[in-house]
Image (cartoon, rainbow, N blue to C red; front, side):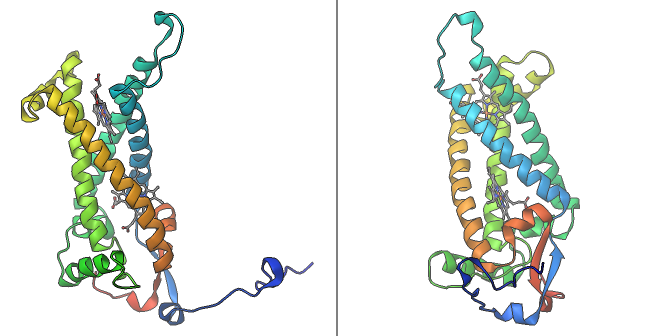
Length: 246
Ligand code: HEM
Ligand code: HEM
C-alpha cells in the first residue's frame, strides 16, 4: 500500500507553505552544542527543580505526617536529597564553567559577553523584539547575545547558591566539610547566608519561568530547531551562514 501524500493532512486540507528567505537559500544541519553543554544543561535543570523542592521544604516543612516521631524521616530525607543533589549540581556547574575556557567554539565565554560590534548591536535588536518593536529577532548561530548575558547572571546565581549552601553546610558539618566555615563571615553570618540562599532561589526560579517561555517563543519565530538543538546538538541554519563571523 502506498503511503498517503504528504499534503493529505487531517481533514484533507493542504498544509500552508510559506517559505522564508533562508529556506529558499537552502538549509543545512550544523552541530552547535557539544555533549558537555547539552548534558550540563539538563543535569542542572533536574538538579535545580530537586533542590528547589527539597529546599522549600527545609525552609518551611509543608508535610507533617501523622504517627510516632521515630517513624518520620521526612526532613532527614529532604536534607539528604538536598545535599547529594547539591554536590552533583556544584560539580556540573564547575565543569561547565571550565568548559567556557577549553570547550568547543559555541561553548566558550565569548557567547556570554558580547565582544563583537555585531553582537552588541544584536543585544538591542533582541530587546526591540521582546518589546514588540520588531517582528523578527536578530539571528545567531550560538546563543543570542542578550540570552548569553542573562546566562552569565544565571551562572552568578548558581555560584551564589553553591557558596551560601556550602557556608550553611559548614555550620553542622563534621569532618572536612567544615573547611567552608571561612565563607560565613563573608556572607555576614549563617542567618544572612540563609536569607541570600533563599532569595537567590526565587531569582533563579523567576529566570526559569521566563526562560522556558522565551525558548518556546524564539524557537517558533526563528524556525531553526532551537529547543531540539539542546537535545541533538544540531541547529538548522541557512547555507549562506557557513562563513559568517560569529
Ligand atoms: C539551585 C540550587 C539550590 C536551591 C534552589 C536551594 C534551595 C534551598 C532552600 C530554599 C533552602 C531553605 C532556606 C531556608 O531555610 O529558608 C535551602 C537550605 C539549605 N541548602 Fe540549598 N539550595 C540550592 C543549592 C544548594 C547547594 C549547592 C548547597 C551546598 C551544600 C545547599 C545547601 C543547603 C543547606 C546546608 C541548607 C540549610 C539546611 C539546614 O537548615 O539544615 N543548597 N536550600
Ligand atoms: C531549571 C531550569 C533551567 C535552567 C536553570 C536553564 C538554564 C539555561 C542556561 C544557563 C543556558 C545556557 C546553556 C549553556 O551555554 O551552557 C540555557 C540554554 C537553553 N535552554 Fe535552558 N534552562 C532550564 C530549563 C530549560 C527548559 C525546560 C528548556 C526547554 C523548553 C530550555 C531550553 C533552553 C534552550 C533552547 C537553550 C539555548 C538557548 C539559546 O541559545 O540562547 N531550558 N538554559
